[in-house]
Amino acid sequence: MEEQHDGGPDPNSNVPIFRLDSDILWRIFALNADLEGFTTSTGRDNNSHKLHPLNVTRYSSQVCYRWRKLIIGFSSIWAGLIDLDLLNAQAHENWMNEVMRRTGQSLLSVIGYKELGPHPGAKKLFISLLTDHWWRVRKFKVAVLPSKFDSSLWDSLWTTPSPHLEEFSLEEFSRFNLFPSEPRSDALFADHAPSLRNFRCTNIGFNYRASWIPQLRSLTIQAPLNVQTALDVLSRTRNLEELKFEDVGIRNPMPIDRSRVDLPNVHRIQGNATLRTALTILEHISHSAVCELGLHLVDHPQSDAPEREASLKALFQIVSRFTENHLIAQKQHAPECAVATGFGFFSYTPPHNWHATRKPSFIVNLETYEVIPIDGIFPTAYRKAITHFTFMHKAAFSRFKDPTLDNFLLSLIRLKTLQLSQYAVNRIFELFLKNATVFPLLSVLQLRFSRGEQLVGATRLSLVSFLLGRKSASIPVEILDIADWDGERPTWIKLGFLEEVVGLKVFWCANGVDGEYICGSGSPEKLDFCQLSG
Image (cartoon, rainbow, N blue to C red; front, side):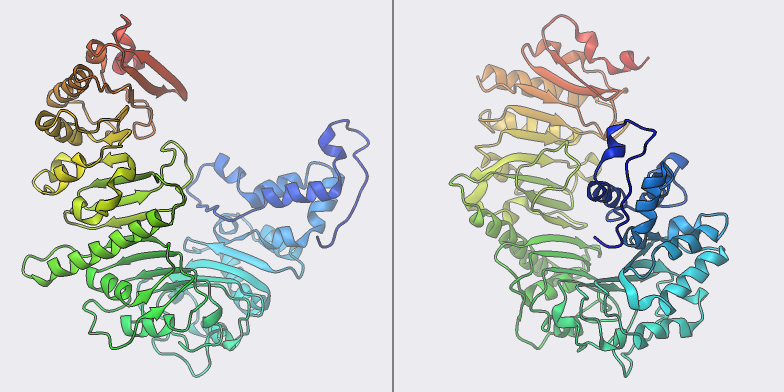
């Protein structure tokens, strides 16, 4: 801990927090000042702005003399709070200057995701960060409009060493190549960035053999790199742990003439690209045994391109291997997992709390604009592992049916929780009519409809018939869960018709309070949310 200034307890207060040790207070202030994951915009209401770490730190420094002395004395706290969006919203630049003064000589963390706008102080501050303070920048995550600055400003990125830079992310709003498209004679950061671990930028040329490339842990590949060059860069990143790529400047990649790139430590890959780009990159890299995958294909299917079907099949096999590798790596004898599918998407995760806001511990995710054959993308040997299944197909895509879906569903003999959209309810009931013992262990049914979506008559009939049919077959669904109806109480829904499914427990959430009703109890009006909202 640096620049600690101790002080005695506030003599005018008996509140315990005022008597805390300075080290404990510093820890509290540092936690309150954590900008990681916190984004801000001037469009937020005033109450949200008050929660911004910079404002919280400022208010805390005004509580009492001792706190003020402690907080202002910790330059490292202020150095981690350089949020250009928030500072740009100030009426005067005095506060910007004061914040920078309080940073002392500490290493800076800078974020800014919105255009700097007309505020002269914000523009002046940004220029100062690149010219006068760049040597002490630790994190730089900024999106800018380069044309609003003199082009010579950007020269500092090539000519100024970055001895403390750990994370660099620079995006430009214009989507034009305003930065040099070819590497300069001198490498980015004057070829001196010994601490750099995370690198992401758009439309900026750099020396692809720079000294700092082998030490990267996270790399985002974007224009102006093409696929061949991207793979050449990756061949020098043996320590890489996370790879992201966004269509890298070439729509139809030429045949790649190189051996596979070995990335033994990569445990997360995310891509936003065309089918050919994604497939080419994934076919030419070797990653760690267990690796996450998130992939969004940005191009639409082309009926006049027969080779696309072969490419899709190859990609589905790759996605399947990511899933299978994680299942193989699980130590327990009977691994469990959750699978989600619908038109154009597939997702695999370990079981997790669907109501929790935190991300699952592992995920394989594919998004595209065409039918994904679920039976061909999930490894057959592990169907028994699926205990949670989400089927969110929409009626609007009903003509794009997956012919392998029924075969896949019938193989889910250990399924416990089934999450459905309205259209999917009808599909599941159709399958139930063909095979009454489908999902023999199913106990929880979750409905997830879009906001305002009515529960139409056909779906009501399918839902009741499915629930009553399972009860008659001695494999009843025990719980119907509507607690997470797009995050709000479904005030447009009437579920009183479920009263005849005696013994079924219905769970919901209204005004932040969980509710429960056992069907057949004689009070079906409790399931009339339209009436309750009135």
